[in-house]
Image (cartoon, rainbow, N blue to C red):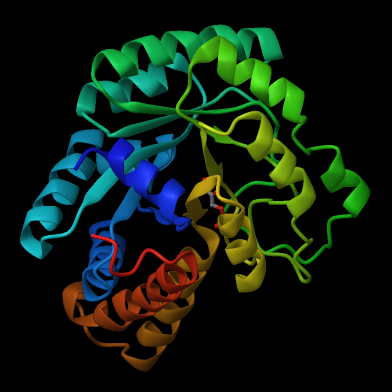
Length: 288
Ligand code: 13P
């Protein structure tokens, strides 16, 4: 199955596929085992930093090996590549999806580079995701300070701008903002489902990617998926938190063991727990 067929199925049947960040093989194993248990397709993703750490071709090889070992569809997404060259690393290594995040650039420059990325990626039958609105916070943080609704609203996507961008660039997927934000907050700000509805209406044939999936109440994510445009939900912070907290606890309990593969199983289980929960919320179980 091509990832585009999977997205079309998700769009039609109103479920989403989790896109889970990885920076090590233990996290990859956790994701794949959870997905296999639930017979769910899954996206493994790496940011440019994670890609550099793992090696782009290693990410692809391990994902492909796990896919054949566990018999489930696993697709690989390059997450938040911010330059054309970073996108080319993923395109040349054979990632299935390329997310070019030009939101730090001017709208015009973002559009020009997105077009170039689309041209390179589509020539290889890969999908492209674009982003025009800048997330107010970085992924992988547990914030103590609340974000105000006023600050958050400044990041919200303008449906007309989104439509214009999609028409000009021919991207497959848009990462839009309607209250979603990277990281976890003391009280997660609510999603603006009305705005999401408007975005869906202006780009009915474009897939939507929901970034900042950590911390959003389950019912709100489900509501966003039910609207029908969101087919991909990105998760990072919750997994990293589970990894780190369990690793600290396990090392405190076992001060002697030197063989890390004997120490890491509870860590893998903790990350697996997060992924399992998300897959159930997103409705992708039994969709392979
Ligand atoms: P969280 O860190 O909030 O889960 O967001 C992840 C993300 O959107 C990666 O692109």
